[in-house]
Image 1 (cartoon, helix red, strand yellow):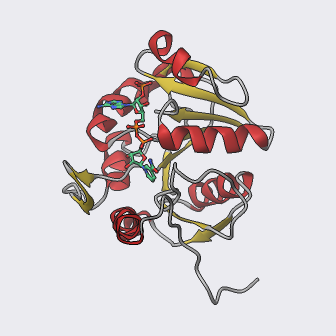
Image 2: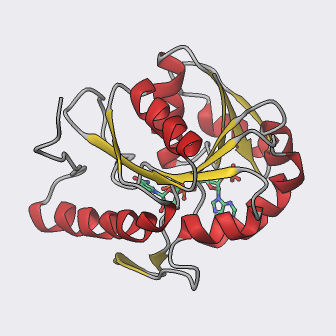
Image 3: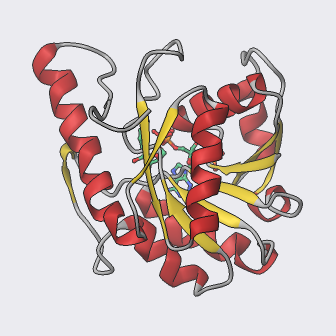
Length: 210
Ligand SMILES: NC(=O)c1ccc[n+]([C@@H]2O[C@H](COP(=O)([O-])OP(=O)(O)OC[C@H]3O[C@@H](n4cnc5c(N)ncnc54)[C@H](OP(=O)(O)O)[C@@H]3O)[C@@H](O)[C@H]2O)c1
């Protein structure tokens, strides 16, 4: 699968990109300034292409958005006309309150993912996932879940496939409005990291059928 990660040069982007690359997928990183950021990824285990956002999505049906919330509007504006009509956009964005990473500032649409869905206005399906994955985790494979939701079953299936590519279990949380809950889990986990003096707490749902 060809996967574009917008903001893939960042902290979460790196964890996702390295995982997808290890699983054998084609990954291209979307950046505002590819030339400036290429050296930022020079130490990655596997080389990865960096392109301007619009070029990054040109051939990818799966697009992960991993930019800070304040960069969402400009990033989506840069790619909107270039998104594949049968594509899926997966938001990992968490609208943390400025200067207060243990607090959230949800937008008027209810969540960052719903804000993105309003911006793309039906051009592509939208899912939300990865809010509880910490960029600070150094190894994959721990029994961590990827909670996802989406506005079509195709969007949710794509999010599940991405979780599987990381070697993690995907948990279907239902419609895109559930992103309101999922996005609030990130500040919860950041608070736990601080309280327990650890780098990367995560989430595992119990009681699900195997
Ligand atoms: N870090 C985590 O552990 C984690 C976990 C769960 C969810 N998230 C969410 O995932 C998203 C990315 O988090 P991150 O920690 O990876 O962020 P980050 O490293 O600060 O930024 C990711 C990339 O976004 C681009 N960017 C930075 N500021 C921007 C702006 N104002 N406008 C447009 N683009 C901008 C940069 O890429 P270029 O300079 O190449 O354009 C940067 O490399 C956030 O919404 C965050 O809340 C993060």
